[in-house]
Length: 328
Image (tube, one colour):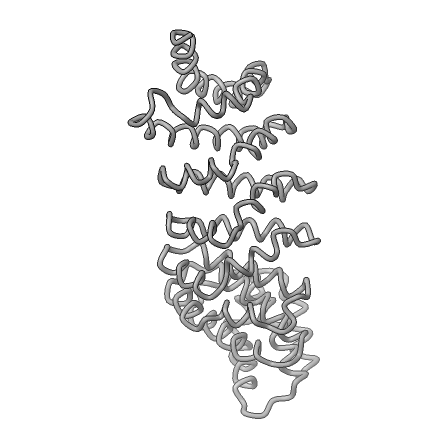
């Protein structure tokens, strides 16, 4: 039986093959074996690996089979065997990509993430990454569900891994943090956890993908914030990582992300004009030398960057410069 399940797992190389396995009731036979009260650990080990291979192909439309897969993984993830735990984690990371609201609710209600954050082997790299994936996938749901994940400790867990030695773990920790940011209450919890300085510093990461993920997080922070939280971001020196990017990266992708982030920030500054004669965020940006960096990009060969720069100058800087010249 062990060898048979192993061979079946090896031929699961496409969704069509998974469908074939389902239609021939092969999965149900394996499921029935796993339901037995006393089951050989070797069968459990090879079966959880087999189920994880099935879930790679996103069999979400086979609701009953999909839910049985998750049921098995949730059962055996509480074993002592690290290999079984690892397979269960990866299987659940694939399963958590679902838009099945009932399953998402179930995983959150079962406090899966809280259990995972307290695993004794959580320091292992092969364990950390799927837990981050599960967290990030579940965090992409509505705010009320994300709040429950925050209560289960997701911010603390992700914050510990922003500076992990593994590039992929740093990148995906930032990605998951970005998913958590959905409203001002959640942003305040990011502030309370003292994650903001770490996020800002991550734009200096030597790994390009980690750096770009950090830009996305900063952009989401600014875009989601109300004016009060934008002021808090300004006070936390959010312009420093933005100006660093303008000075150190000339590739189109990075510049477009950065320019869009600047535009979002300066747009928030418009709403502070009821207590200022001018947009205070524009003033601070100019004082820090940001306008010079923007103007240098007017000759950039990328048309989208040229358009973004022109928009920034026309909509935010032209009037400010005129007002400064008039006051002089």
